[in-house]
Amino acid sequence: MTSTALRAVPAEVVNDTTSDSKLRYIIMFGAPLVAGIALYWYMGRRTETKNKVSSVPKKDIRAEAQKKIDDQINSQDPKERATGFKNKGNNLFKVRKYKEAIECYSEAIKVCPIDKVDMLSTFYQNRAAAYENLNMVDNVLQDCTKAIELNNKYSKAYFRRAKAFEEKGELQKCVEDATVCAVLEQFQHANALQLADKVLKSFASQRAKEIFSTRKPDLPASSFIRNFLKSFCEDPVIHDLEAKRRNEPSAASGPPSGYDLALQDLLEEKWDQVEGHCTEEIRQEHDKEKLEKALLLRAGLCVLSGRIDDAERDVDTLLSRENVNVKVRVNALIKKATAEVHREQYEQALATFEKAVGLDPNNADIYLHRGQIYLLLDQVDQTLRNLELSASLRPDFVSANAQLAYSKYNFGKRFNDAQAEKEARAMFKTCMEKFPNAAEVYFLYAQLFNEQQQLGEAEKYFKKFIELEPRDALGWVHLGIVTVQSGQRDKGVEMMMKAIEIEPKCQFAYETLSTFLMQIERSEEAVKMIEKGIELAQSEGEIAHLIALKLSSEVQNVAMQRLGN
Image (cartoon, rainbow, N blue to C red; front, top):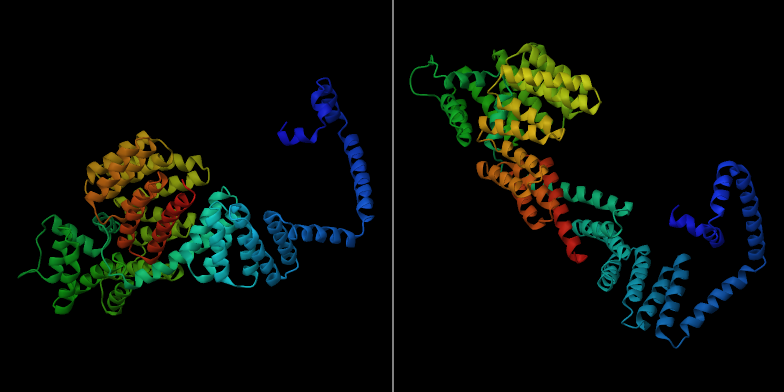
């Protein structure tokens, strides 16, 4: 029995130990009867009370209440006088006489002893409420600020000031106050939480637009570029790259062309030089086939650096040419669809993929990349169907096989399909047998174990990934996450820092580390990491996400400082 229930039971029953069995008997067998008696008793009491209240004229009640307020106002006690003015103001507020209410609250503030800070805080907050109803936003801000200075845990004042800051367009301050209010109310203040979330998104979106419009495009981390290149098995540029890697003799004679030099740049991972050599090939116009491949390669780099207009320009130039090799044309369509996804033009992207299918229905690249779009759109059947088709067309295509296994596992887990999960595990084992040196397989298999909280197995396979791809920062980031989850916090942080050391341009490393630092209340360090992540972000959406993360961290700092934690 709860304390509330005990308070509802008469003391004599609580103290009478012999009544326990009687109570149980009534509860078990006499509930309908007791309920009926209780109902009649309640109705009778309500009628009796109603009659008593009705016997007192409303005019007399109002007069009595007014006399009490007048007595308070005329009192010689300053505290009593202040309370009287406040009560009079409250009555005027209820009937929407806000100007008169403000006068009363001002009098209350004037006569209140300065050491009665809680009372003064309430008066200022009440006056702010009246100002709010008159749309006098600056006055609301002033009075809420005064109320908070007097009582820094006054949640109502924080929320009212948050709304005023939103009205003034001071969005960061709005989020700060709404968050402090939510903290004070133990996150039970739904309106404060909704306001903070709404304004946080608005602020982040607004700032992201400003930053992205002035952002100088840059290529992402090396691991990102390498993984992008590995996601194509039918790309003629990748075929040329692999031939060069194997030192196959070239049919061309004379000095290397711009396209040849671009391939060499890819081999040596001199990413910043690739575009210049592609441009050189395009300007020379000596070799039709190399020119078209140079356009294709340059378009891919533009997509990676977030220069979507430039990417589409190269792709459209390529698609407008006659007698283009079908593999080149299809890959150009895939890159065009990727650019459209960057713009969140999903229907357009899917239509572009359909054009590619019409040209080369047995091209495995189409289905891998279209499957990823369907995954973004959360279309489960289409995702699996496309990945399965890609893997069946090219059984030697590592990305298609690994991503199919991982997607099948994820969907099985999501929909409680044990058979799908079992099949996914078997597919991973087959992948490891077929592709023993394919790092992507071990990475995704490690992810599977991490999601199941089988941390030992996850650690084992992330380490295998790092062994195969020691220059890929993502392995160190995820190994750091697993290490933190295993209870080795400092060691996990070291691994994330190692990731940044390996790849200073790895945005994911900064974002992950910042999130973890926020959780352990190292907010200032977290903000620095997020700022670096914002510098590296490749799209407006990524920037907005990171700005929201940064503001959340800063707000956490503000809340702790204001509340003395």
